[in-house]
Length: 288
Ligand code: HEC
Ligand code: HEC
Image 1 (tube, rainbow, N blue to C red):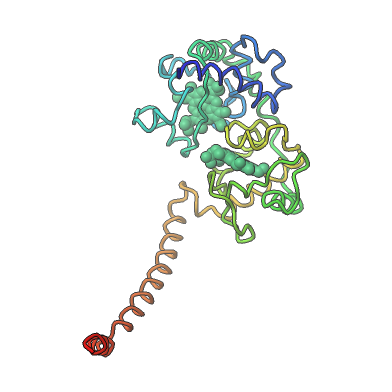
Image 2 (image 1 turned 60 degrees about the vertical axis):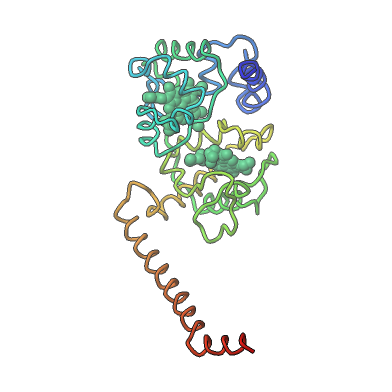
């Protein structure tokens, strides 16, 4: 039953989901896809083969590091493995700042064919070239401002996609009520890098977010503006980044002090309310 469901999903998903967004990359979608096609439609947003880290690790030589069985399980549901405490899965998850890799309802044979592709493509740099063009020019203040408006929806997305703040929040006072359905994005650039976030927005790999943007892709200019905005958020809130423990501790200390002050005033007001006079008065009222 599960298997049938998985197969159905595997058959329906590329057509309904990713195909809409990265359809142009994969003209042979639907029929038996080669490892290269599968890689370019599902994995290239976050991985290169021989081109270095993107959102996730470079998959060059992954078959030397891990067994096929491990890779198949990880690709089908990395979070299941991580929750079950697989030490290698937990280690790489932590190394990549707890960035969840989406589950892929692919068959073991399909995943094997991707593994074959990572072997054959190793070192040719082709996927790196496709996934990592020249570093972006420095963002202008206008781009950052536009990115913020697009994020909260005060400027509509050209193709009608939903505002990011309906699901995500950032630690910015101007973004009043960001959503909590998905992860906070203040440090998204710190987690995945410019290129990583660009490629996530260019071919959205997360099922829920993908559905929301189905047939409503972001434009190049929107992606540039959103990346500029998230970059400035990341830069102005370094304190929230796990790497900067010093700043984090300082910020935590400050927050802790404020919290304590608040607690004191709360506790103090309780104390006043429960005064001796009040207790005597209550008893007299009750005994009447
Ligand atoms: C949204 C980004 C994203 C997409 C899309 C993605 N991955 Fe990943 N992948 C990651 C991240 C991040 C990690 C690091 C582990 C973690 O954080 O869970 C990872 C880790 C891996 C690993 C473990 C690598 C190692 O060195 O142990 C394999 C194998 C892998 N991915 C294969 C794939 C395959 C195959 C696809 C396409 C079907 C794919 N990934 C699509 C983000 C992604
Ligand atoms: C319908 C809800 C929804 C909307 C709208 C949405 N996202 Fe997402 N997004 C998700 C989900 C779900 C994930 C997967 C990770 C998680 O659970 O947070 C995600 C993941 C991401 C990530 C990777 C998260 C990380 O750990 O760094 C980025 C970057 C991102 N979204 C950016 C955006 C931007 C920019 C917009 C607006 C153009 C947007 N999203 C709109 C639901 C949404």
